[in-house]
Length: 312
Image 1: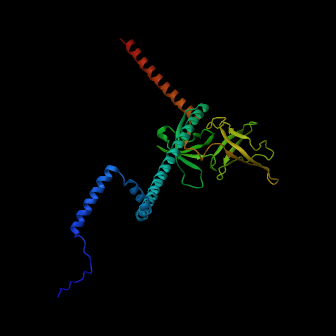
Image 2 (image 1 turned 180 degrees about the horizontal axis):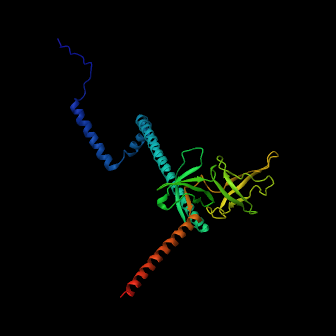
């Protein structure tokens, strides 16, 4: 009997090793021919275009992650930059304010020097240190005292007019009572008609009043009040105030006159302390006395010398 042959259910091709050799050889040949003739370039370009959407879709998660990270990084960076710019703006604003303050102070000092020349009297440049502790009085403390030859009673002015008067003196500081204080009075005259009067501090509202003037007194709103100079403390002609209101009452024989000071009492730090005429006279008397004493001593020495020469 013929031996029965088993049928094959799977057709077996070349072995895997043979396949690797064949396909590797084919790949090398294709690579060599493509590098020499470039006939696969259109195919590669077509495949690149065809696969572009797939590449974009595959890379989209990474692109989205990178963009989100850049967004937050950029936002934080911008916020930090804004903070730095804000700080720089604040510092520059402070510097500008300081420069403007120095400029204003310099202008004020120049004006004070001009006022000192106009007053034609020796003056001390003083600076306000602080205001008085009593809220019911109008007083300031300045940085000039007896060590700077400041004495009580000296007039205090600024570039616009009378500020007040030195009332207490310490070695290195002095107390200045402002013309709006109730305890301070200043002899004044109306610049328009030379009418003399005395102004008193009102004690509040930063104004002065002119009491005890008759109801028919020739004073009008807007009249300028200046120092009369009759007290020997305030030089004549310095601005004091401007009349703000003139009221009369049928039940009173006196007019109610309110004036606003011209000096920048609340606006400046620098003031001028003027030497009073009385102080100048005292200084002149002291100088004359010292000169006479020195002359007497010299005469005595000369007389003694002559007597000694005459004895032999």
